[in-house]
Amino acid sequence: ANHRNSYSYVGTMASRASAVVVFVICVYTRLATPFIICSKRRGIACHSSPWSHLSSQPTIFQVKVKVEMSSSISTANDGEPTGSDAAQSLMELASRHFASQALNAFVKMGVPDILGADFMSIEQISGLLDEGISSNSQRRNVNRDGLLRIMRLMAAEGILEQSSAPINGSSSTEEQKVTFGLTAKGNLLKSGGQQALASVVLHWMEKPLWNAWAELPDYVAGDCVVEQGNEEAGKEAKNALPFEKANGMSSDDYYCQENAESLKNANEFVRYISAEEERAVLSGFNWSQLSGKTLLDVGGHQGKIMSLIASKYPGIKCKCFDLPEVVSSVTALEGVELLGGDIFDGDLPSCDVIFMKHFLDKTMWNEEQTIQILSSCRDTLPDDGQIIIAEAVLPDDCVNASGANRLHLYVDVLFLLVGREAARTETEWTSLVEKAGLRVDWITATSAPSCYMIVLSKA
Image (cartoon, helix red, strand yellow):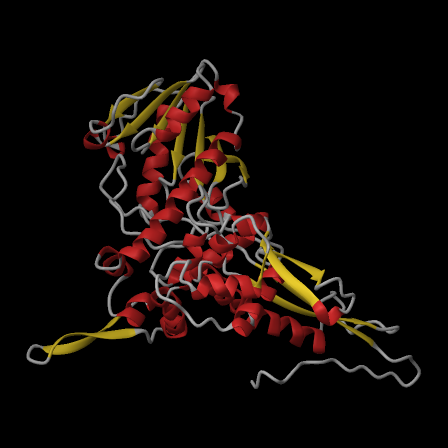
């Protein structure tokens, strides 16, 4: 559409006063989600499997038109919007990528680092960009109008604060100096910080992953194919994942080959999510009630979670169980006993409570294997024992999903691009554990959207 065009709503009522139309732009970002990462397979007490999880949610760009009239807006009997309101809502949905792409430009130009703790005008920011003080060492010819429009959107997004001050004491609104500074949320986008959320923005918005979205319709319809073979032996079509179709190679090959910057962004985000999940595990369960008991982390890799729990709750006897070759490479941890073995041998170390983090993900095992693992855990525990699982959980009620539940609906679709299995819903978890002679005591969200706490006991 021509950028000069604008949308407006005109209401006329024969017996009413004219409508008052208020346009409100509300833009907000939801960060969180998945990543593509080339890394070593996670050490687990079983056959090696790829380690991939997490999550996030695309940026949302809402443009709301609020119509205040003496008459009520037309709605269906169940309260859902109809007519122009439904059309407006649909436009909001279709425009959500506008803010994510503007955010990508904002981060990629290095504006968060340029601003730092200061408030600056467009002229000041442009000057620093022109001098190449951001991520590019070459001088630039900055499009100041484009920069201003992105900065406005970031202010509406809550990434920036906007301030106006008179020029030379003038009271005229036309002679105001506008400056921008980072909000608390915007500060998370600066490089070098512990949270380093700029990495997920750059990762999700780069062309390989972004272009894969264009192949999603064909993938779902069963028409996403690529040719393999050569002219001599003959070529044949094979089904392909959206990422593979868009880039001519799998996501593993792309991020493991000659794309160091892409891999760097992915790995930075992984480190951030891992730290968030560790904090979520510590705060998502009342570990103090396990004082005097033995806690076993099945598939605990290098014992990081058990080490954190042992240091905070020394009354708990913590054990980490994984493949012998995994635990043998781990330096001794204070308060944690490292034990080697194979979960499928059916001989787990004795314990009172079992913990598993991202160990029962669908990418790891089929349902039969998962039930076997859970059954082995049940047989190891005393009658009052518990199993604590830290995993992503999808909502059963998608219409009313909110918070972390809603976030995972976005992430779940993103997983389609790289062929990752969906997380289980609450109902699926309940059905699964029942087949292993267990029951769900409770499922609760934590501060990390990718890490719910699921507590099980013997049925």
